[in-house]
Image (cartoon, rainbow, N blue to C red; front, top):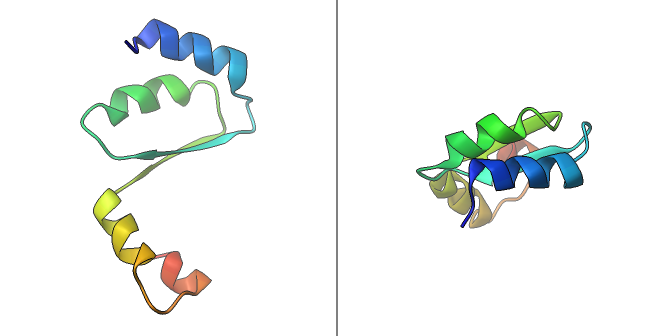
Length: 67
């Protein structure tokens, strides 16, 4: 079971201050973000419905993928 203490231990041992982390938006993602933000440069939360829509686009450009 993942607890705040285990996540904090993982983050302090494995992650580096210059790391960037991406998470899929879920019910508990914001609690994870709170812990990880203390250990990395940036944490991004992705909306899975938007990510899925981008993945299925026929036109792939940095401009389209950046939306």
